[in-house]
Image (tube, rainbow, N blue to C red):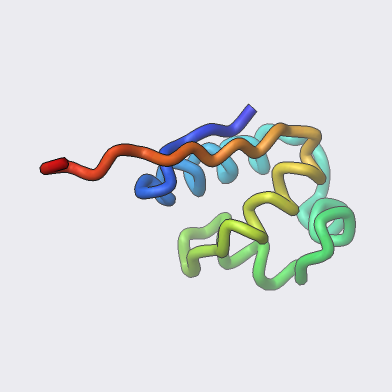
Length: 77
């Protein structure tokens, strides 16, 4: 399961990167399963670009993970 507060997008991205690296499948296969380009996936894994929450959900689903964003409390409130 991948969970992180909505204001911690970097936490979600890091969890996804680790899941991708540990998945034991090629990035080509993962990109096809998730419906994203192989180039985008490679740039994401190598920290050259960020991804949207929608793309994060697609990748999580392709990896067999549950994607559950939760609303975090804003500091100062």
